[in-house]
Amino acid sequence: MPDPIADNQSMLAQRTLKSITRAVGVGLHTGQRVELTLRPAAPDTGIVFRRVDLPVPVEIPVRAESVCDTRGLASTLSPGGDPGAPKVNTVEHLMSACAGLGIDNLLIDITAEEVPILDGSAASFVYLLQSAGVVEQEVSKRFLRVLKTVEVREGEGVRAKWARLEPHHGYKLSFEIDFGHPAVDQTGQRAVFDFSEGHYPRDIARARTFGFTKDVEMMRSRGLSLGGSLDNAIVVNDERVLNAEGLRYDDEFTKHKILDAIGDLYIAGRPMLAAYSAYRSGHALNNLLLRKLLEDPGAFEVVSFERASDAPRGFAEPAPAW
Image 1 (cartoon, one colour):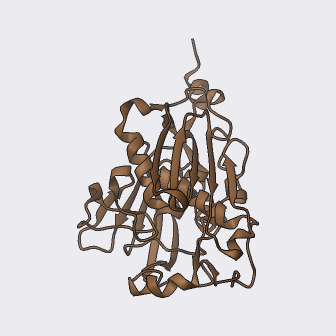
Image 2: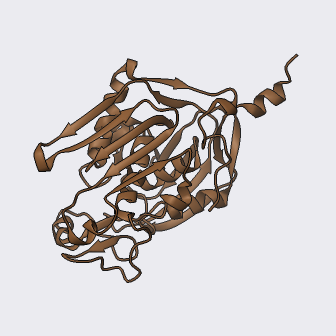
Image 3: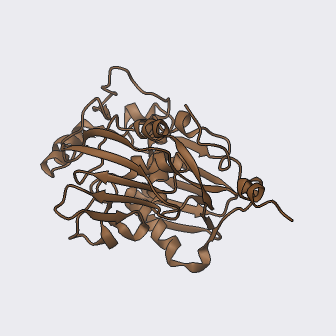
């Protein structure tokens, strides 16, 4: 007779935190002080934000249909995607860290409408999650496996942008940028990250968000980037990077776009088995891609692995340390 304990140990399981952890920072766009409290959650909870600053706390589950806005250079969620409901903005870096460490279930109490930017990357969130400890749960991890190619495109000629998901036994992302800017053009214009070979905390998590001085005045007139600074973003003028320490990676701009894409796609609520590729994509196009995938029942399936050895490389290992 099979040993149920041995069988359970061989299963590729869902993950949550071992203990509570907290962070305080400011929102990149609002400049507001905000506190985050990350709590363990039961199996199959998914990742849920809770606006605890409101008279009656509001829960905002992380799902593709919860995205209500992507115009503010960030992904914004609300219950059911209702634009008039309470929101939580700029979720992509925290979601990317959760995806990178394989966190399936998490409750996130937040005291304002924007996730703190911290250092502009996912590294601080990775540190927070790892400091709390990551534990496996006695339920199978469920993946979204892409079964056929799905693509979205926007613009023509030099304005063209696109993003694509293709079937792949694993999770691989490739991204190409083209800003036509001397400082950016000197760096890597294309990057690839494969979860089966790479090391998310080391290879991707430290890539910071970036902005151009010529855009700052326009963004601030629209109430955006009020909390942005050289401490939490790469800032580029007409010719060069202004941060005294320079770049963390030779291709940091492109790697940050991969970091964002990992976070945007994890808004599906499950880890993905697919090959993602994109050219000049952003939050809006990534969300369109996700919605197009989920609108076609024949384009994906939800799968789990009762034997971890059957899963693609990179998913069965413990959450990687730095």
